[in-house]
Image 1 (tube, protein in one colour):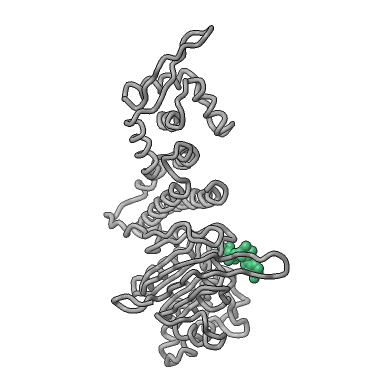
Image 2 (image 1 turned 180 degrees about the vertical axis):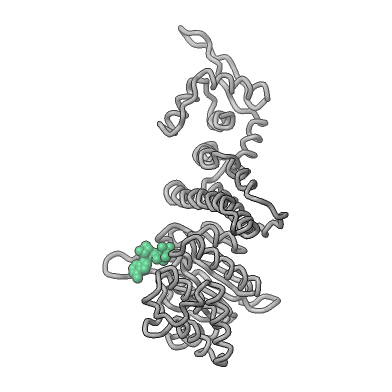
Length: 168
Length: 251
Ligand SMILES: Nc1ncnc2c1ncn2[C@@H]1O[C@H](COP(=O)(O)OP(=O)(O)O)[C@@H](O)[C@H]1O
Ligand SMILES: [Mg+2]
């Protein structure tokens, strides 16, 4: 969630509750909405790491609120996030966050993100094809595992194509 | 279009196709510049309706361009008439259609040998080449069958064998694995990989990431235009390993 919040802050300074609302608004029910406590914990860590800072803003008849903003270091972290292909078990989710959020901040272009991700998927697929060729044909569990990974990857690519049609 | 080492295999300049059938004109291909070097394997990807088939059909002279230029092996081709295209195809281009186009009243073996014979190959060569290709594609025992007796996937493999029979300078293919199950796709992948290693130039429309992953370069179309054109990283040589890596890839 760190980088999602950071991306939102790079778009515009906000306080914790506004970030929660922004995530809910952008992703609707598709985003497992974080509780406000998690958000403040994450903001605290981001601040400690120097990626964001906060200022106290006075409010008329309520206690001061803390408004966070992104630092130059934070920008750098975002650039790196946007520029690297997405790894990990929840490839689609993480990439989709990047696809939706990164362009909001002006740090990345959707077509560029999609193109880079496609190349990355194809490179993984190439490795899988090679792996399948190197793996004993009679090792059914191994072959099926590879085939499963290929099918997942094919689905990721088909979905990427849909993103390109509808978003880019 | 030539380079220091010789002519490009294929080259298009601002290639445009507008279909005008009845109502509104359809801009299927909107200004494509594509340069394919000899020996290169280019995969064409993109959503349905993005102009992939139209593009490769024009490259093979099977559809006329609206404007722009097509160069095949250093010679201007978009200005050729139908019979000149037919000769060019016979000499230089193998084509695998999305929908096979096999000759129904000829055996599988004759379908595959025909292009080589038309191209002037000695009968013995044509036969050996046919036997090799059908063998690689697991179709040896179908040689005497009629195309209508084969499944869709088998017909598709025969179409690939036919396109490669004449060892064409350029192989153009429109979704040649669309009807194949995993096992058959594996045979086709192996054959494509092999002919490519032997220097075959390939331009292949595909949705199949396994096929595209073999390519040197992937061109992506959207709405009749190129939105990405990138070299694939060369295949990483990795030590013989098991499926453990796959688990890692997907967490
Ligand atoms: N013969 C035709 N007449 C009219 N429109 C066509 C014809 N062939 C293709 N089109 C249109 O041109 C566009 C590109 O089609 P096509 O090249 O078949 O795309 P793809 O192969 O990427 O799915 C589509 O909008 C399609 O409807
Ligand atoms: Mg098509």
